[in-house]
Length: 184
Image (cartoon, rainbow, N blue to C red; front, side):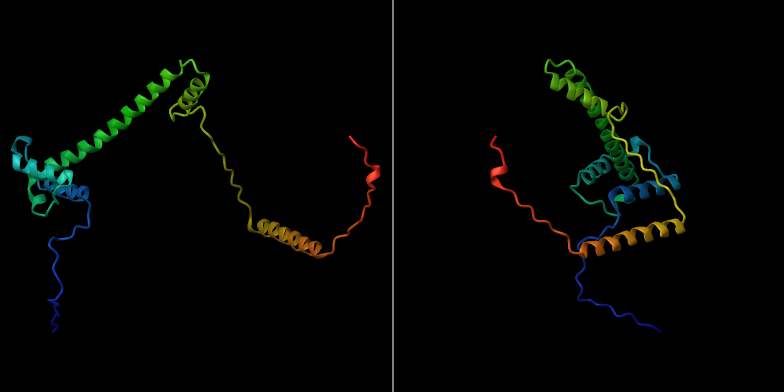
């Protein structure tokens, strides 16, 4: 029989470490509520659950396992998390629309540089795609034998170039008489 050896001198943490993000933990708890058909109605969520969910959502408190065992808190926290995601998406769309509208206004600017820059930026919008840089890459597959032959040819050229470089270059001396140069 095996007897476990327990170290009692190891300090115990004040809280249980969580290795999952809040979103993952809430999604798991929500899935469990759906599987057990235990979802509370919106009017059944207590003010205490709403307050606790808000505190966890803004980061003032950590969600304990006991907190995520409360169906009301899980449903309310899930609604806060999903609302937050939608607001980010809406604000990104609003920001895109705002920038596009401002650029459209700048196309009537009396300064030609500003007009041209705003038109250029409008053309770079992904939906328009007028000034996007497109790079085409063509890959040709070659048989192994052909690649080996090309490699041999290049290696031969490199080796021949090294031999030529080691040869002493021929130098010629040219004498120029200063009197032959005309003054400008």
